[in-house]
Amino acid sequence: MKAAARVHQANPDVLVVASGLNFATDLTYFKDHSLISNFDNKLIFEGHSYSWGGQGNPWVDGSVNKACADKIGSLNNNLGFVTDGDNAVPLFFSEFGVDRKQMPAHDDRFLSCFSTWAAEKDLDWGLWAFQGSYYYRQNLTNMEEYFGVLEIDWNRVKNPKVERRLGLLKQKLLAPESKAPLSYIMYHPQSGACVGKGNGKIRAGNCKGSARWTHNGVEGPLELKGTGLCLEATGDGLPPVLTPLTAHKTPGNKSLPVNFT
Image 1 (cartoon, rainbow, N blue to C red):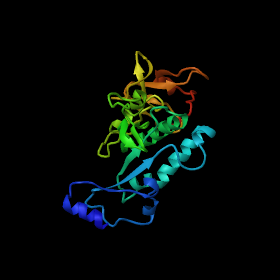
Image 2: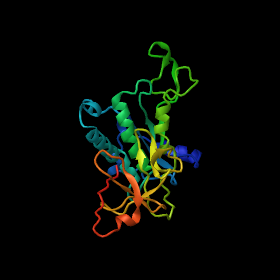
Image 3: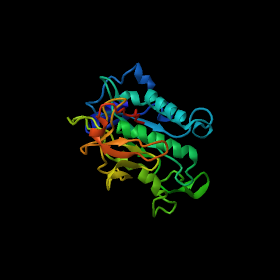
Image 4: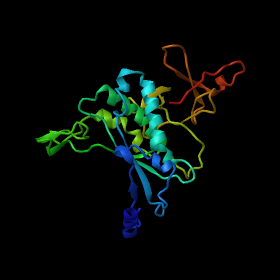
């Protein structure tokens, strides 16, 4: 508190960043305690996350759905809770990343899982790491940083696919001051694409200015906002199609349940 107060006193316009325990993965202390002051709303908490942690390699050895559910549960319990309630504090995810050089399965699956959570929370974030190499590290000169955005020679992006997958996370997705009704973005984190309409068909493409979808409950039509068209399943293993909303309101028609993940 003394250090944070000194920073705030020296420059009341800068943010005061408070980190958690266990390499910035655990803020649960603040479930029962407070920092007393939020420094005129300049206080933010930070968090880190990677594919490792816990026992074994759940992203490869078991159910990917369970591994993702467990990861999101842990993120919410240990970090995300600070953004909820009457005394909410912003959360800045200052560090996450993947091995962009080799892209092993556990990092690939973690990135898809983490991206859905970060998009839903509309988090601000930072990556480990930008640099492509180090002058000297671990007794090696020009050691490559496999997690780096840049190649070892720093002249190009190491893995453009990862950058595309992060595209939606670079946009403002939640606007607390907005009076607009709730709508959804249909996001495919494995590719970084968002689902909308093109040439009269369902298309996955760039998330900039992505289409919005509306849904009124567990069962009911999933409507492409502003078009009068709804998503309809045509059969097992077949691509869905867009059909007029009026067809879904016909007596006797039963809508398929839709789950957002």
